[in-house]
Amino acid sequence: FMLKTEHIGIAVKELAISIPLFEKLLNSKCYKTELVENEKVNTAFFKQGETKIELLESTDPNGVIAKFIERKGEGLHHIAFEVADIKAEMKRLQDEGFVLLNEEPKPGADNKLVCFLHPKGTNEVLIELCMDKKPV
Ligand code: ZN
Image 1 (cartoon, rainbow, N blue to C red):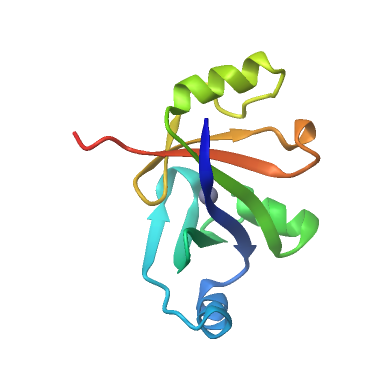
Image 2: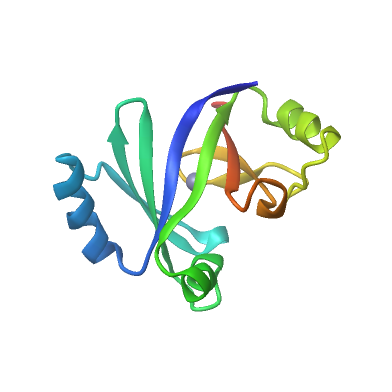
């Protein structure tokens, strides 16, 4: 089951511009930046109550975030729901007819395992499931 809205992902052209912008907007400091190599993104995180804001900057002109900005411009990219058991939730959603963009949970930013749902099945909103990686 879904626990909460964990974070909202926003595609930006330049973190160097958007981090100070969101610091002003939220009146709180960016508490972490993290390169996610396999997704070709630089991320920056803000805490806003229970929910985080994740800014996403492409590190590669052919990366998914660069492509997204090319098509739609900067802006809302995805909503991430925290789940208790990502594999169980992936199976439940697949059984309900949703299309998963990755068949296995993959490593995401912020020490998470993540799975994305195809936006064509979710009113064009990219949905991410995420779960904290278990400490090894
Ligand atoms: Zn995310």
